[in-house]
Length: 182
Length: 51
Image 1: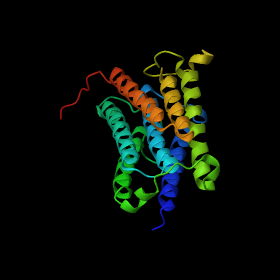
Image 2: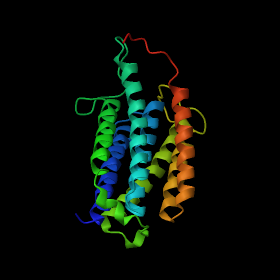
Image 3: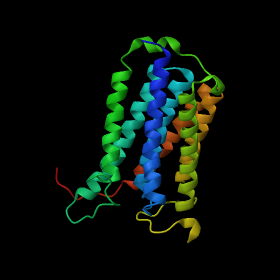
Image 4: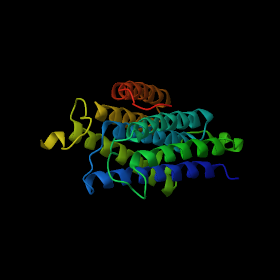
């Protein structure tokens, strides 16, 4: 198997995680559903997964990078499980609208579980660890460049949107308006 | 506060891009630690379920 294939597989993983975050953006900006504190923390965990994947793309795959992805996904799964448990109590309404039958936090748990499973599988291929050298942005293939730009853009956009919604202090438990516009 | 966490991860990513591997790991570590503390802050209510 070609060594650079694994950089590209990690880049594809970055693109998939970016699409998940874009879907959350769509729900917030078009659907008008403001992100709760636990929702924002799940986005943080997605960004941490993106960081681990980016390390593999830029510096080459390493077991430590896969550990970062796994730890980040565990963190995200813990947050989403906490939110599922909060809303599983009888008489407690769910947060937000369902998307394809499940709420965002349920999807988040499924996605983080898939990330952990996928990482366990891909990390087992030892041939990929021979190509652990730095590659500058301009020398990457287009798919890697696109993944890096999307990850940086989405992380920055999340930071700006979180500031607009919550301001510099604590987010409201059940936000109904943007801090900057209220 | 939460926007600061996104900023920390963004800085970690940028440091990776400019081949500052160790600094990048350090910033990521700080970001994860603060995220865990923030999660603890937001998840201290008891959940009314019997397991």
